[in-house]
Image (cartoon, rainbow, N blue to C red; front, side, top):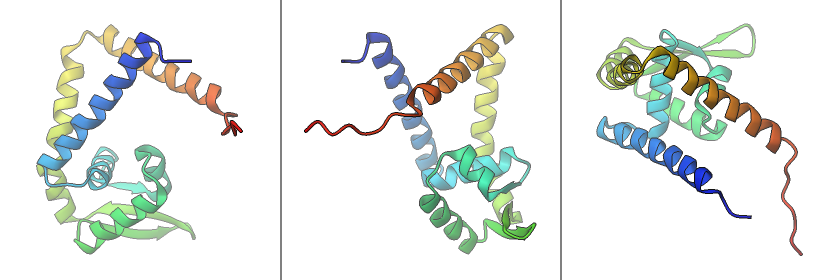
Length: 149
């Protein structure tokens, strides 16, 4: 079975969107992981639980931990243990300055795009995207690799 014309277009748009964010990160001098971590921390008011960071960014745990370690070593974020085993990530003052110079202009650009659309189009786009995601999760929940031999 091959992808439909619509599915190929959809996949192309997702890939091109990912590539546009990657190019933005590169232009800002950030790795993709650092970009997403700074973005998420900024969007969360400067702090975020590590488990939420994992969920919100979709970055693998190994890659996320490596990027966090580097950002911590660079003085961009700090880690605080809360509630026994949970860890909270915080932007440091240096991290806040870096975020203001990098990810906040990107968030501004994104907000201006949605602001330029009629509210009903924004709602339709978001609800259709959410519906697709929920249905995709449901339909792929039990998919496993099939051995063709």
